Image (cartoon, rainbow, N blue to C red; front, side, top):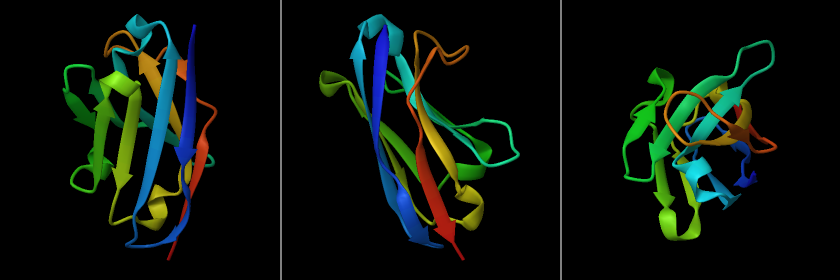
Length: 117
């Protein structure tokens, strides 16, 4: 089993920045890939960014150039630095982990990010 505990999030005005963190515990083979999805009301959950234990990254098109994902393998932590935030970034952000890039296997509880115009 894997547990993912998120922190960060909150409310910010458009153009501002926020940082999300997620700490994983459990079988290390289940968080070879870690990252974030988000879900806004009425929308499907969408990929924000992912990062492998080797440092390979993948970003959703809507956040490229504005968000940066990083991880500390020694601490089993993944961090999402969000800059130039837009109202359309408002959503619940979920940390995820998986043993490959195909699909998420484990989820955190979610943290709300609200960007006001």
